Length: 118
Image (cartoon, rainbow, N blue to C red; front, side, top):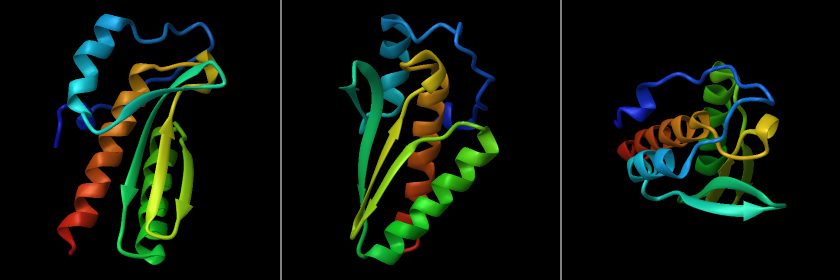
C-alpha cells in the first residue's frame, strides 16, 4: 500500500489550486500505472483495470463507488465485460487536485484486493 492511499481527501472548492508540475512529479510515481489525459480541456487521471469476467468488473466498480462515497470524491466509471475504466479529476476546479491522486492510489489498493482473491 502506498503512503498516498492512507491519506484522506480534503474538502475542495472552486478556488482550490490545482496540483503544480512539482506536485505531479512527486505524486505520479506513487501511481505509476495511471495516465494523465486531457479530455474537454481538463486534465484527468485514467486507468483501465482488466478482470476475468463482467461480474468481477462490476464488483470492483461497486467497491470503488463505496470508497468514493466515503471520501466524498467521485470518479467516472465505465464498466464493460472484463474491464473497468476509472477516471479521476476534480470537477470544482476543472483539473487535477491532490485528492485525485489519493483516490487513484485507493483505487489501486482496491484492485490489489481483487487480484489477491484469485
